[in-house]
Image (cartoon, rainbow, N blue to C red; front, side):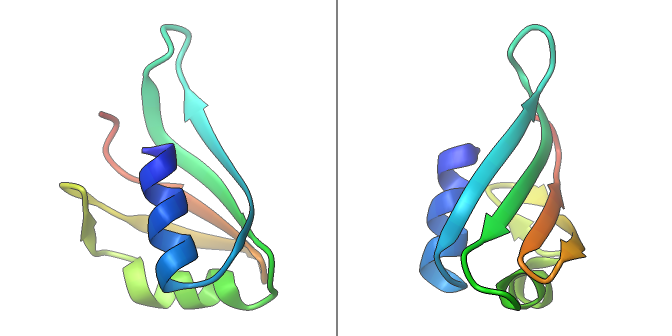
Length: 77
């Protein structure tokens, strides 16, 4: 999922500064990530494009932490 998020957001929104996935103790994704964009305002653009949309079979729930930071939550896979 980390690679998918990185490719999706960098190609359709803007360059990323960082992408941090959250995993459980067994190394399985919890379906959450913190995405930091290189440009202020890109997190809001990503939210407007993808909040509530299905990406890779999972509904995206996106919230803004700052103008360049986005919290991503989807189904754990």
